[in-house]
Length: 309
Image (tube, rainbow, N blue to C red; front, side, top):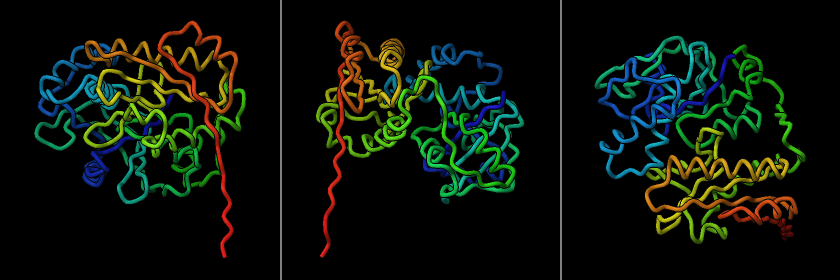
């Protein structure tokens, strides 16, 4: 099955033009390590071996940063298969689209030395013609994001058609209207984090001044928000209910917390969880009454109309 990915070509797409001209995508972590024939199929095995190397080369980084870097390096170099489609911001307000046509290659001394050959399509995609859902996904923070759920829309762009907005389906979603609302809530929380109750004690995880804690990848799916306490003693997993069944969201946040505890937490660093929903939910209360270190928040929306003279 063909997969579709959004790939950032350097911070703020600084290497996009060079990669476009050179017909490749690439990654810049562990720049002096030739990884030819060194990628296991399982990215967790790769992380286990190379996180210590990354941390040795970057002693100022944390395990969260190292896990993100090594996981994305594995995805770009091994996880993405020949025939998969990549969308890459050009840095000019549109997206390059290409098909991956080559296996991993190491170009020592070059920018983004861990490379894959790409056949770029002649047409680019302007951000303003994308559906809102695809815009949100391609605008997510981080180097790599899987956007395969928008395959039909992307294929229409490749063929030169501009499709109507697409509504994704998910059998775990009980209320589509709340799901749509809380997709916006996630972005609102990130943009206004310091004005929220959670922002008093936690910061969204950052790497080199960029918030990488939104949609942080894990082996059971992306974490909505990964934050760290201001004293660095706790990692916080924030999951929005997004109209899903209560049991689904409780199980999901517990799985994310388990991943963070096992893979990302530093020694003596605790892990807490938060579920945020539009309204009170008795099922969530019952589940959390026997769950440790998970809190439940609800939110309210207030609109104010101001008459202009």
